[in-house]
Structure formats: C-alpha cells, structure tokens
Amino acid sequence: PSKGTILGKSSLGSCVPVRSFALMDYIEKALEKLSEWVDRVLEALFGPEPQGEHDLIPIPVEEPRR
Image 1: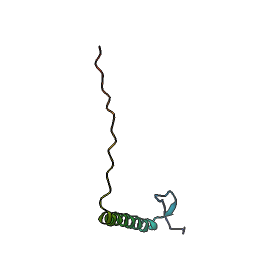
Image 2: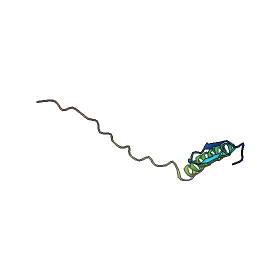
Image 3: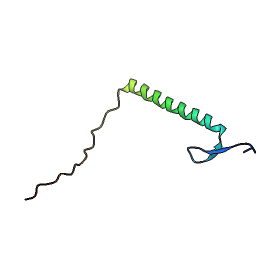
Image 4: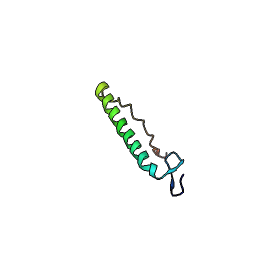
C-alpha cells in the first residue's frame, strides 16, 4: 500500500485499501441482485420451490403424579 492508504478489514478477513470497500460493496450488492433475479427466473420456469414438511418441535409435558 502507498504511504497515505488506510487499510481496513474485508468480509473475507484480509486487509484491503479502504477505497476498495466501495467497489467490493458494489460487487456484493450486484451479486445479491443477480441471485434474486436468477431465483425469479427459475421460479417462473419451474414453479415455486416445493416446501418440505416442517420439523416437529418436541414440547415437554408434565405427567400427572399418581
């Protein structure tokens, strides 16, 4: 890095110049939008994703004393 460059931590844990954060944020947002768009296209082509059965959650019940 140059003498006046400020370093920060990226989401991947490596040090990067702060100026790179704007580009990384832009790329991350673009990938999120692309992922949403792909999901919508796949849903339009193949229908909604099937919902599996919900997992049952055991609820403790006190048994009456005899």
